[in-house]
Length: 477
Ligand code: SF4
Ligand code: SF4
Ligand code: FES
Image (cartoon, rainbow, N blue to C red):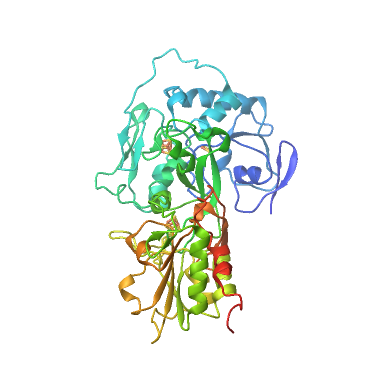
């Protein structure tokens, strides 16, 4: 554990750290563009320069290993002048188009310009123009004029996703990031991470392009339900104070974008593209009308009818949702677990062409909470005993052709599907973005998700519902 001195203050560094890492870990901020904690060091942007004490030059902190007694300054006149001139250099050909750039509000270059430079360009030369709106894939576009050639995106495809899909071609001020011509970037299921990695607005998500200014949005911590990895994510949606009253009010209750929430125990700083697209799952046409044999009913009547069916059943069975939260699963077990024969079902399976499993994040089980459901309800495959007279189906993914003949059906579902109207009792239930809870991932890590939007009045929360449909006598032992 070498002791180093930053601005005269003693700091305990770790053996394999750089000055940049030791500084950040101990509360000394040094700016950086090209360095990233999960990528190799390239040292090309030069903004992280620090002054070795007693010398009249700077060296880059991101590639400076610590050694016992080392002394550096992060805020000297020389360092401040170095940052200023580095920013002048980086912005030499950078367009000042922050007003139309999606990265505005979360752009490191913008922040550093105000913090460390703050002056107009001293260049008298016209800016070198470059290619704009280059389609690197169906998901991502590149503005080369904004690119500062930090190579984070290139290193990501080489070191993390393994697609080797991006590179820099040509030299000097003609350097261009480009995708390989074999289509590897199109098929890189982790490609969208480069949008987060890009410190400027050069790499942009096509689905989010000019959809919202980021300061109108807020991130709600959540969990991607796309597979049993259960990646930690932020779901971005409009802040309450910036709700739209006209124009497109649907934007008030929709997810604008999904980004990774760094969680070393689960996904690190990455997610796959399916997680980015998870809004397409939540925002399918919703079922918001309770029904009795296909006829609209109010929620209280549907709950009362379900309760009667449960009380009358002699041999009930339940198909438990692998998208239920830990809280909902526990509520079912407490209220109804002793009365029903239970089977855990897979609500979702891999879609055609979807990556089933890989070595980075993606898991074969396309449901977020199968493990927790099986821990409570066993892992028997679905099989109805002779005489089953009531089936409660919770969630998607079940073929109703497999129902026992003559059995009554209670169906809890969030989305519009034809079977809703075939059930004796249909109760619409909330989706993950309308409630808070926890999932337990394949490795046993429990992660919380929070509600983003209110649910419709006629939609039930499964956690509360199970106690409401349990007969007054309570569960059979
Ligand atoms: S596109 Fe962005 S991440 Fe890639 S090299 Fe340019 S600035 Fe860096
Ligand atoms: S790896 Fe699984 S949990 Fe993570 S973002 Fe992709 S689909 Fe979602
Ligand atoms: S962060 Fe050190 S050179 Fe770029």
